[in-house]
Image 1 (tube, rainbow, N blue to C red):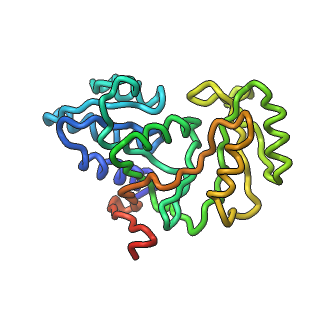
Image 2: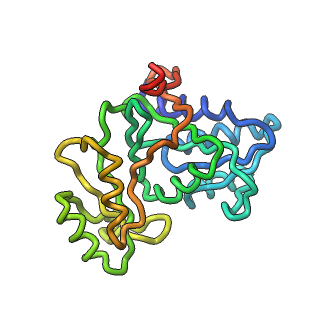
Image 3: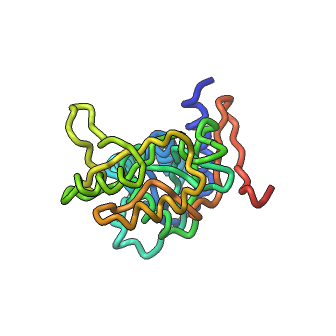
Length: 231
């Protein structure tokens, strides 16, 4: 079995948490696509829910399958958001944003009663910072914003799309991907440094948002990750 089997297992397991009448937040990414696929399968068995999507891709997948997708500003509440992560540590801190939707994902997660995180075992890390940290930046003054980030000692590169042009986030902004030579010891402090720079919209750090974390194994089994404080 493969990594895709692990992703599918976690996505399908999380779909079991969804109940009739819920308004469900849809994250972004390959693992979340399996979750949406599982929801569509449950629709055929009578599941009746509404959704709010963090990206055009997730919204399109949901609508094509027959799910109702609400504008987040029209949703009276969000009962549960299910989303993946690029990295997650033992304290359930995360780095997200590989798909360029992390600001919307963070708004969606923070507006929900619970965020359920779905990952395969390769996303579990002892410390955050092995993957790139996406920083969403406004076009206006973007060179000056980059210079201020570089002056703090953090080096990165503007994200490009496959055609070789600048990648645009779900909000139409630029993404500056920071690469760490070694994982930062205090990611919360780093996040606060970054968001105080004019022009920075947000970083891909997610703190104190994850509820249940479903981890998929390549053999198709799953388990719930305990918080460091619970062990």
